[in-house]
Length: 478
Ligand SMILES: Cc1cc2nc3c(=O)[nH]c(=O)nc-3n(C[C@H](O)[C@H](O)[C@H](O)COP(=O)(O)OP(=O)(O)OC[C@H]3O[C@@H](n4cnc5c(N)ncnc54)[C@H](O)[C@@H]3O)c2cc1C
Image (cartoon, rainbow, N blue to C red; front, side, top):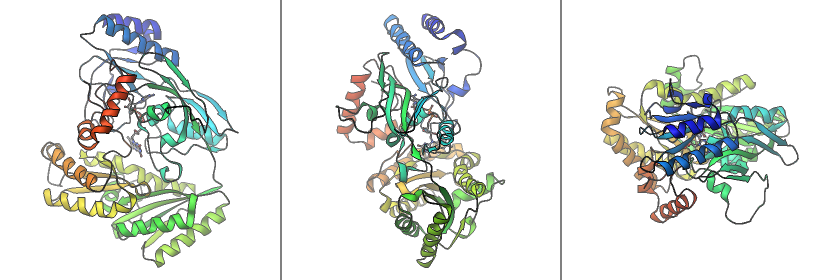
């Protein structure tokens, strides 16, 4: 392996090939569930250097096939399914894209932005805004996740009901293949039916089919006004009724519809006392709504007022507050986005990121809550998520009296089984937006159809026959 390290240092410069010191930022996953050991962390600064790393690893494979080196692409390392950190073998190279962080172009007439994979999502949002445009991908990790990781996982977030997932926001990719070649696919075209859609294949492949080095992304006009409201909702069927009303009153202006259960909000209130969490004590559910209006603030307010009046009259909400200004709106969003951090503060928990058809969410939650509380008395359910997309973070926290680590040891398998069987019964997905990584690999094998798994294996074999890229993620390494 020493020859490989020397070759990498020659190609990238010694400073950009880390083998010693504290590598925890690259080796430890965000939830601190596991820590791997990297052969090296490499930080290429260009697409050509990424290709050189892949070629150096292929050459090392030829020299030492009995110790097969592999590559783990990494962006901001905020992924939640243990897909971006190395395993314990000490034979994986972590390829950090963070130095590929240039915005290459903004085409105002084509409404596109071309940026390198290591650009931080929030930086891209700001770049678009400074030019008078909206890049709508938005998630709580946006201050540290990268666009390459967003596309690698086909990230969702809070604006999906209006703008779609990361896949829907991408018009082209530049990719280093598992052979160390560069695919220049930054077309920026909205129409291109020339065979298989390689872009869509690469998006969501979690670093197992190629390394994304740049992307051409869709921009939208900035709305003239954006209003945020927070409503107390008496039940989940009423939350659905509110969603129907919001679609009817706001049309394409409805850009956010986030559901939060009372226990989830109680954790935010407990662990982040600097936040003011509205209305949570009086209601089992709260909903955060966002209205983006292309006419004016007055128009946005009138529409919102009409919606909330109708919702009160129909009993979908018991109370509501509308943010008076941007600062108040940001505070409301901060509460929603702080829930994952509050959960971390409360202790380890069993996370699920599930999707079922929007219409079936109330029945899914009622049925699954009943199964879990029957099986594990005192279990605490942290429910929140993107109701507008049928996507819930359905998380399970230990009963108050039980140590969290012990709870996981005793019950993780049982809880996963109950939740995923329920997801199956309701026609859902076991991973709506976080992906598979290594954490959900075994579950994927149980829940994906054998035909689909067979096609996925054939694609992996065709594009990465050596199993060089992120082996053991998404699919078992054979
Ligand atoms: C507080 C918090 C909130 C979150 N909220 C959401 C949410 O609302 N919606 C959502 O979808 N996710 C959410 N996530 C998960 C996570 O932020 C996303 O998955 C994000 O897209 C990962 O980006 P990253 O740059 O950190 O990627 P990483 O974690 O570094 O990598 C994730 C995966 O992508 C691969 N990858 C990374 N870069 C590349 C590349 N350039 N080319 C090919 N593959 C690559 C990695 O190998 C890995 O498999 C949240 C995470 C946190 C911590």
